Length: 153
Length: 153
Length: 153
Image (tube, each protein chain N blue to C red):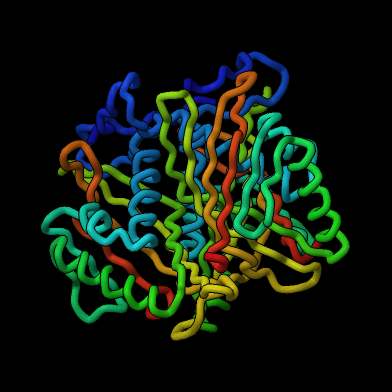
């Protein structure tokens, strides 16, 4: 069984990414989420473009730009450290399409786990995560991320 | 470290799928489960062959054919909408082998999450999912799915 | 958007694995964890090298060698069978780098689910899993695994 033929890349419609890019996105997300969960705030922020936008249905306003995105992560990391909580962000069920403008639209489910020190691991949140990815200096970056919590629909 | 050599494809034994097909199955499942979780019932049913069979150890009888599979999904979607519950089906830990008859046998774990509107996300079920996949009109389809809930062994 | 160029393989620094190897590791983990969850103790132990080392922050001492690793799994499997519990080990969020000595360092998150017979599936543990992988007789094997439970930091 050979892989299906994809529409030619000059098509005006989005086309599913190829195997190598699909895998690269998985790898990118694994690194990115480890940065977040290990409170590597600067590394986390640098996975977004300089003008990156982070929107969430749990936040009144989007975070715009690396500095704002780093700031939000720093504040969250400090609170978790105080509370002795280890978060783990899983992104999975990846769908990814390349658009004619060269961007990649990547949609995932996110499962966020929370474990208090000495306590019981549990599901914290279930969300969706819709990204617009671009390539900069060889690597992927998030230009726009939209996170929607399943409890806030 | 280069990938291991796989047995030649004319072998009579099942052989692990190659990278491109492994990735394609991951992508297929991501799309398929999004159809289900977004109550896109017709699109969900069309990920099965016309004579597709869906069996589950929680159901007394298998669902046979696209129409029956769509019907089951429609009923479930209506109940969830009434209850204000968002389900998320994660398929992961994929093992996939190509069989001499051209079918692909794909085995996954399924994790089903449930989030009530305004409430706490939680694990709903843990199951296994064993599929026989075929290629039709360029895309993958499920010819036979067997879902076994871990609580009903 | 084409995949980024990776550093040349003669580099002295670790380099991200290519698509084929990334996928092969995913496939390897799916098989390996199914062996564990199905109490296929010998098959599980053989996914480690003969001198494989399994360390965990929950264990006072590492398990060293296939026989010790098999023994630990057998004991755990017997206890779970007595208790009527089905465990599922999910490894995800894979990051993998090839090192100059030919080993692959693979880092994952692990989510362990637990379902009692007739009962409710739930998160059992959240951990990280850091592996040193090598190739033997064509297949991947774990030379060293370090599991760290998030509750025992």
